[in-house]
Image 1 (cartoon, rainbow, N blue to C red):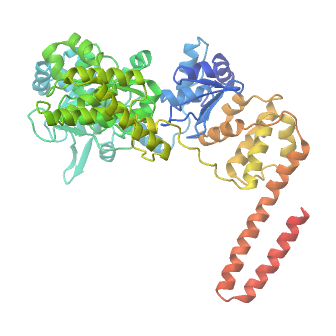
Image 2 (cartoon, helix red, strand yellow; image 1 turned 30 degrees about the vertical axis):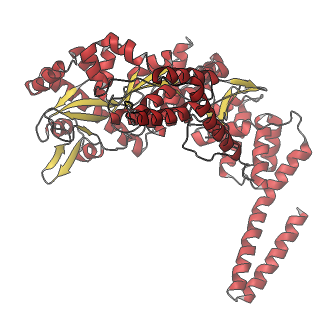
Image 3 (tube, one colour; image 1 turned 90 degrees about the horizontal axis):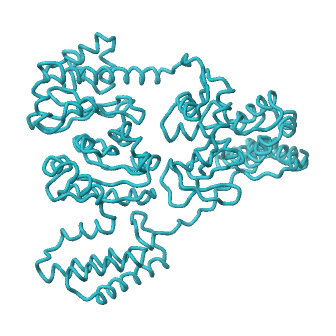
Length: 608
């Protein structure tokens, strides 16, 4: 962890100001289990809780994805903040005094490149916006936006811009700002050809794309005259991966956290127009389908997603594909159902803001109701054959629901609409449900199904992989060291840095340094000294291991013995493999020599 120039007393004051259970509980629903609390991990999709919070140690750890740490680390991960940013934000929230020099630590070449590209994008966004709002070049685009209902205030809020139809106007502007043509190409702002750098975006309305921290990282340009492609997006770059970016998350995050709900749109125009209508928690994917990476981001900030896609067949089909992804992540989903042929932008234009908010977003349907609505499209309901086909499919959808009340209400609704007997529909649905129960008992292995009662159970736990004895010994020894200065000094005397796993040796070295300055164990404070996320995660996992309060010297000696003999055991196995290879190749002299060395090693191991 790069603490920069933040004084240790500031870090410790921030850690003491927060209770880890209360802090994590703002994002994760936690349930008490013994001394700890458990919940679904906000950093990866899971059905069975493996995310653990320890109030005693004031740390969190996920046994599924391995992420762990203290309160500051949790804020860093959930808010996409650097360590200094997280400390400053938490200190301000807790009303703690803080002060430190912001002199940056030495940047890597990769960090320098990324920072340069972000700066270039910030300049580009300002330049495009200036062209749109203040020049003759942008008048046609500005008029087009106003005609479409995009007010100047919305253009300001979303920093909309215009890329003029000239070959290299942006490239020339950025080159004067000391950006190289290579940087412009790597950042997706220009292409380099025989005649130098040429702007990627020309004669397009520009939508800046921000990352979760509000930094411009890409653009999407919309054509004005119907030329294809309608939208042109920045390609993948060192600062932009479209499978992880959600448009407008940086502005919508506050309202999403307050309401615990995000409204997911298909496009930028829908987000902007809905913002003008009062929907301040709207986001969109970057011209792609919803991905598991997107869902992982959403999991950190909300509990429910309202899918508000276009009312045409393609939009409704896309909404159907979102539902299983959200369900697997444990995010509640609803679907806002627009009239066929209308998108949110058009609906707001035709019916107004209030009708959109009240009649579409707030009236969004539960997944089962949407699946029933979606299934209707496949059948000609004016024919008896079409009605029967739809009711059979509807019975299957209803049968998959875990709630008896929800099943009965939907069946009564279907019976009333199609003038069929409720008992008949109930019998049909029960028969389907019985089949599903049989599959449940047999064991359904379909990982792609969702919201099905026969899949709504925890996956069987796999037996943990058996680790070599010396690795287990090192982990247990480190766990004891984290609880005791006496044990740490004993290990330092008898092993020092002779741990077999490099990561374990590093953790031990930090423990030696920690107890050289502190008398009492304090895991949170120790964790704050580590300078590497992998070390933080490893230390957190080890600290969650149960250890006895008593220091049993015989047990510690057993661990030390196991660690010391590991190199000889590895050498023994290596020589055994070499001897077998020598025998197979017919080199009997080499095989005999190796055999003698193996006997000597075995004798050495017995005597240790």
